[in-house]
Image 1 (tube, one colour):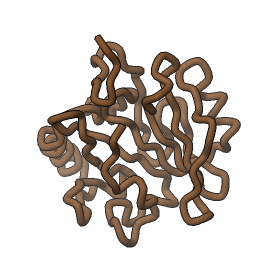
Image 2 (cartoon, rainbow, N blue to C red):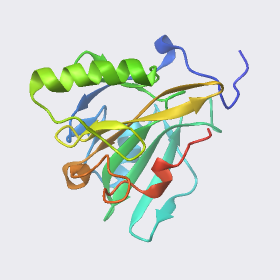
Image 3 (tube, rainbow, N blue to C red):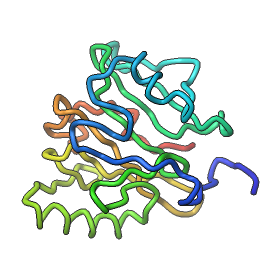
Image 4 (tube, rainbow, N blue to C red):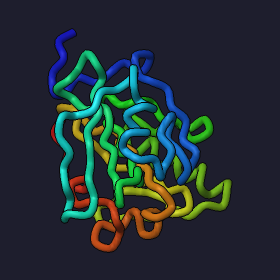
Length: 185
């Protein structure tokens, strides 16, 4: 199979990570410094050679699968040099599960229905942002969609407690504008 911009990883080929809401995503713990993130991902994902600044206070780095250096698997966001947000690429990122609920690379409407059931049976909030993205402040989860050629797939954005308040709100939340724009990778 040729690796193009729109190639979607097979489910069996994805790394498997567990979400502990507002605490950790796989080997990444919210609050880690950049060097700790590099150490946690060593052997799994490789960092980009450059960081991106968002309004001078938040930095982000893309991390790549070793065999796919042109296509990021996830983006890590840092505030005050501490990890506060992880956005997982729908096409080739790790499969992140919240208990038994898979969050990555799914049909958004099906994930939304499953997430609504999950939040309602456990007493968590379910809110929607201005672009119609479902999420939960209590869980620190926003379920974005990402284009994959002619289809869209789920791209979860997972945040630390310091960014959880209004995390689905495009204008008042702390998630950088770049994450709300359509991602074409």
